Picture 1 (cartoon, rainbow, N blue to C red):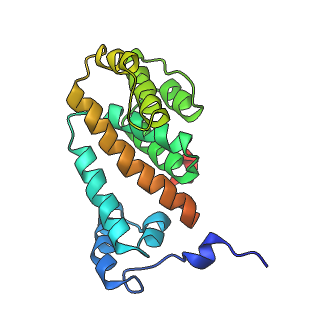
Picture 2 (picture 1 turned 90 degrees about the vertical axis):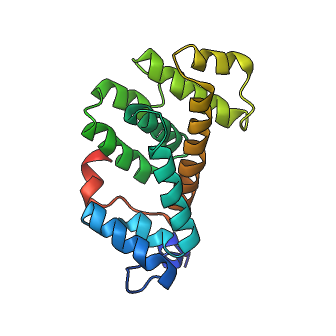
Picture 3 (picture 1 turned 120 degrees about the vertical axis):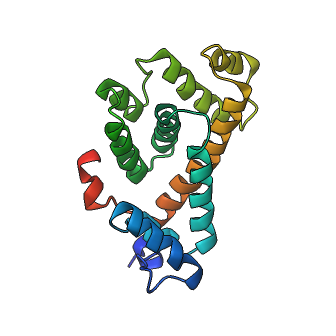
Amino acid sequence: MPTTAAQHFPDLTPETAPPAARRSLEGITRNLGYLPSAAARLAHSPQLLDGFLTLTALFDATKLDPLVRETVVLTIATRNGCHLCVAMHTAKLTHLDADPDLIAALRAQQPLPDARLEAVRRFVHSALDHTGAVPEPDLAAFLAHGFTPGNALEIVLGLGAYTLSTFANRLTDAPIDPQLAAHA
């Protein structure tokens, strides 16, 4: 009988998680009103859970506006095939009142209707395609939309944070929580 990721990574609770992960799980539950299955599975590695929470907090504190940050995240989520992340960040974009055509294009991995956000999407793909060594024309195209070299590095921070989460969520086969089902 084949094993499933859920057998290896059952959802943990603040009571069953390793002691080093309990405070993080309690904080997530307080913040969201529920404990997402993804966090409950990431808690098998308190260091990974804390690292992800720290990296995302740092990414959220960058000079990039929320719509740009979510464009980065949903680009990574679709590229890496993380169905949970797609649902979660579709919900975030919906909460930000993002244009439904923008959300649909991001989910379909198609060019975006907003030229500035399309420059972000293309930069993310170039950074990933070239493992960070973004060709000069791609960097220049990104910068031509009013972004700075610092913004390029902030996107690299987002790439690290959300590559970590998409890989971990796929490894653990984290399901979509009922709270996100409408955005799946």
